[in-house]
Each structure stands twice: as C-alpha cells, then as structure tokens.
Image 1 (spheres, rainbow, N blue to C red):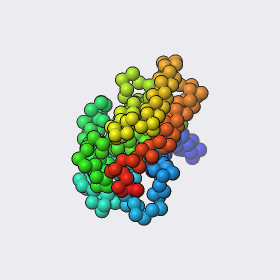
Image 2 (cartoon, helix red, strand yellow):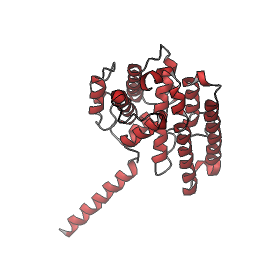
Image 3 (cartoon, helix red, strand yellow):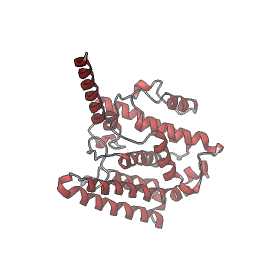
Image 4 (spheres, rainbow, N blue to C red):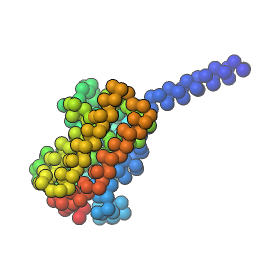
Length: 276
C-alpha cells in the first residue's frame, strides 16, 4: 500500500509539473475587455453601464474573445450572442474555430493580424480566416465605414494588438516570437509596435498632421528603439532585470494608446456616430 501511495504521489507531481510547463498565464476575458475599453474610450465616455450602447460593447467583447482567445471548446455564449445580434457569417459551431490547448492557441492566433506575413499550418490559416471574419463582420455590423475596408481592417487590428499587448504585460516570463508576437525591436518590423504604427496610420489617416497623431508615432518609435537595444543584449536572452524592463515597455505602449487613442477615435465619424 505504501508503494502504491508513492507511485500515485510521483504521478500527480509529474502531471502538475507538466501542466505548469505547458500552460501560459494570461489575463482573463474581463481584464482584456478592460484594456480594450480603456484604449477605445478611457475618460471620454463610460460605456460599461450605458444601456444605449450595451449591445455594441458586448458585441465587440464577444468578437474579440472568439477571434483571439477562444480555445478548448469555450465561447458558446459569445457565439450565441453574435448570432442573436445578427452579425453575418458567424460559425454555426465552436468546433469550426476551436483549438485545444492554451499555448497552442497562442501559436495559432497571437502571432500577427496579417496571416500572409506569418508561417502558419494549413488548418491554422483556415481557422484564423474564420476568426478574423468574426471581428471584421462584427465591426461592419456596428459601424458604417462607408466602404473603407482598410479603415475597418485597421480598427479591428487595433483591437487585436491591444489584446496581444496585454498578454505581453501579463506574462510571467519571456515568450519567443513563435509563441506570441514580439513586442518590438525587430529588423523585419514584424512586431506589435510596428504593426500598431502601421494600422494607426491607416485608421487615423485624416488626422496624420495632428499633434496627437504625431505624438503617438514618436512615442512608439522611441519605445521600439529601446526594445531593440534590450533584445540585442546577450543575444535576446533576458535576465530577470531585463524581463522587468521588457514588461515595462509593454506597459508604456499601452499607456500611450489609452491616453491618446480615445480622443482620436472620438474625431472619427464611424466611431462618433455610434458612441458619441
């Protein structure tokens, strides 16, 4: 009996260790939603208890979750809400977009908005295409982009990168680019900072000469240069002190977004007509 207990203890320890090494800590959906709402609205409008836009806010939250963070069969309620909200081409079943494991879903959904720039497997490309359309079609249901699909795409990309950025803030260790998109500093520009700069340029093209726009771009460029210098140290191997600095840059980027983007969105017709 004593031998059996020892074997059980060893097996349970092994399972626990395996789960710890294969899981990825991340914010839950409520925390992700808070970051998204902070970047979209901040102090300009409190939408969380506003009945006039309740459905629109919930639709964005559901679509962001299903597009980016759904895995292991969850998301039925979010799927049902978007179907009832009459978003077009919503999958009939979660199985059409499902991934089974936390870290695997990151590799398939957290490495960039534009799949043409990333090496995915065939099944990942197929499911990512369906996932992206959930967010794009939800944005189309809520807003009138007047046929400007580039603006719509960049608005959805902004929501996407807010989520990925918040995961970089929440992570308790550094994950490489093949698990989650790099924060910044890459020579090929395939990182969160460069992608944000690109999509902000499209989304706010009419504001490109404004002080607010140029302030955001300048800050992103500066933070990117600091990340590049950090990653060059020790060939990208980050000490605990380096990692704390790395997370600090993720928080800096988020702060730049939440203290500038809401005011810029307020001046965009498609956004103003729904929320202001």
